[in-house]
Length: 310
Length: 307
Image 1: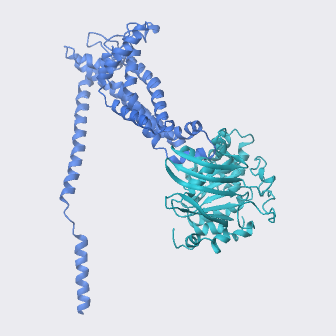
Image 2: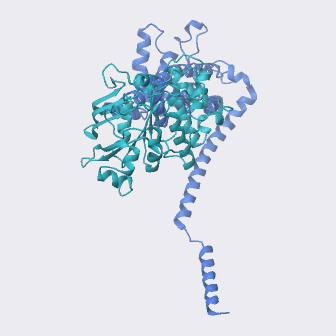
Image 3: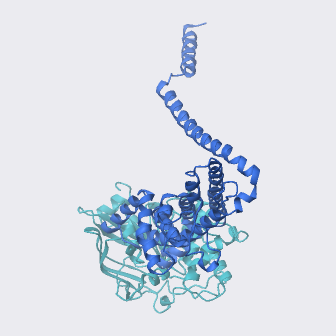
């Protein structure tokens, strides 16, 4: 073997060494462990919460089954059910969807598509973002001092009705709806707008036929998530009069009479002295979670369908 | 399809200089050519061209354009004659696209934009108070740098413009004739309901051209229409432009010297002044600009010595 060949062989070996030698990346490995640890920690907490609620709730469902879902309120824990709460939460959801969604999407559309980018509009946007972070109990106070008083003065019962509760929740999630809608509108590429103007579309036509359909999946997701948030809120509802009141049997007074909702029921039952109510409260939480999950599932379904057709 | 890139001045011989057309120039571009596709629906754009083919379709007079206080284009006066392809060339940032977008008032959408001077379209001031920019854009169509089909079906991409403009007639025929003129019909006739975004880049750009044609404009503005396309698609678009100029007046911004030389009849060379405002250095028949420029800057630019 010549020296040249030998040295080439040696060089080849060192390349081989270099390629196969792993650098020991200690910080990188630690970081990865930290990330995985955080994930597991969050999952564990969530799992413990769910397991705790489910174990407490399962005897109730096992003993009473569907009766628990339809039974009215009662001071007897073995007879009390969440029927009233489901009705209340459903009505609140409809009120929020009918008020917060159109107002929120319209506001976002104005700010993003129509308003000039001025100091004023930027100031408004910053404030909307801040409003989204205001504690919900503050909205409860607003509901009490504005909506309850307003509906009372309008002669709608004593004002502590499901309308006041729904209006309070709508105002609570309005900033969230606006912000998510703004983000969705911003994600629509400007080239689509230009293309629309280029064929002689007016601003309204561009917004209506091009921008809003393109933003719809994002808007939809954001709004339904906001709805889920609203349905789980307790503090503002309690302040806006959702104590354990049953809906009036008289249909014309459903909206103006006393009312309740699932979170208010959970809140009330968990403070009752009887232990049996604790199990009922856990079961009510399961129902609330199921409703929220259902809302999210609908949002995902609608978004997928919209994305496919557009 | 017409042959590839005939010498620019073979298509429309002109006296080479813009400005009031000399009496010696015969109205070469005058005959409004019957199209080879039967397109009965669309009242063709260049109706005004039949009045006098040598009348400029667009006449820009002393135009300056401002973004806020920054003057992007200064004192531009040019004319665009019917059934010709005019190329706007020049280094980046010299205001070619800005100038192009003043012609169909696309710049109105930019906050703080302001126009000084006049843009005449068949003799009417486009920036007069009572002019609706939406109407301007229907008559002066636009094709953008990056193909930007609507996220809709191929059919709806074409039908959108005619629909919102309340055009009468059989929509299927409008769609078909627009796609035929954009040389896209054979590629897509079996999949009109598929998304326009599913097409290739070159097809998407031809779809955008078809979309621009569908509202029966008589001017088509093209803002670097081939810069996102491969050479083959570029060639197809250029061939298409040569066909389209039989019906339309085309203004194209391009960074591609060969493209300007191949595809245009008339070339406007712009440059940036010291205050960064764009101005017209020289304009003329494309052949003259590329072979016999009067200005040293033009010569340097077209020969690739700067820019």
